[in-house]
Image (tube, rainbow, N blue to C red):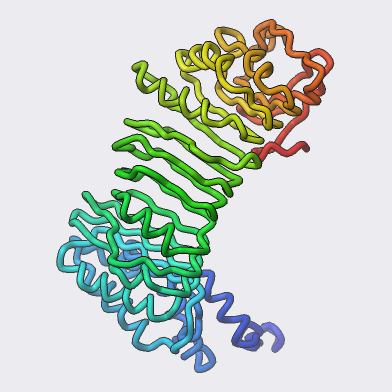
Length: 401
């Protein structure tokens, strides 16, 4: 026989605020199902400040795998909006897979309802075989501080009539066609914007210019033309695998950290020139991380870096994928950075017989102005020391352990 104490429902005795916080950690479908537990839980779900809808999980949980028929899912979402309490949302998330043309009006209605709930964080992830235009209501919601838009759909682009997001601090765009007028509208209509992340988008833009933006990420984007970046307040700049055209940096903060990841295979001189020009535009950078395993590009950087303006402000240099045993001349970088204080080398694990000198290409890299050289392998295992330099294990953020 179980004791009386073991049968006490201690969870239900918790205060409403704590219970709604707990329910905020699961999907809305799971939250709503708690209404059948007892009278104590009947209306509790309606006060949860988070709505998280996922069409694929909904269909799997209901053992229903229809052929792109989302009727039940859409009815569920609308029913939640009708019966929940009129409280502002902390977070709204919608993951909607396989949207068809008949779903689009319902999809637009759902986003309009969400905007009226004044969410602080909004995340929309949609895949569809149809062209779809995000509704203008989500671009005029004054409460949104963080927004993520992902549209895996053919030729989907954002072109709202007006952008008025005065509280927006972070915007992330994925799988969209992005045009100049939209970027200008965002930068002018989002006076609090500090972080802009663009992933896997087609960029038909001329310029990204902002004196407020602190972090800019361009990840695996196709550029239809050369893009000029002027962000004097930026302290973090990440550019990974730009394709088709180049990026030029007109104005970058001397306090900024730049993370540049080049293609691993570069086939023509034009593609290589894109990366050379990008590196040439970073004379004021304070911390620089370069990643490429392309030997042709490494050799070209060796040839061009001595011709660049000196990196006077560079304090930290981090290299990943560079081959120190073949054609990469590390001193050519060091000589161009007279105030360098730390070098981090991510090295492919050598064989047990590899000597210090072979690993670093027999380079005399002992200028007096360098304080430390940190080396680590791809497995993040501590490496051996090189001459008078102490080898220190570093974590993925470059911090000493």
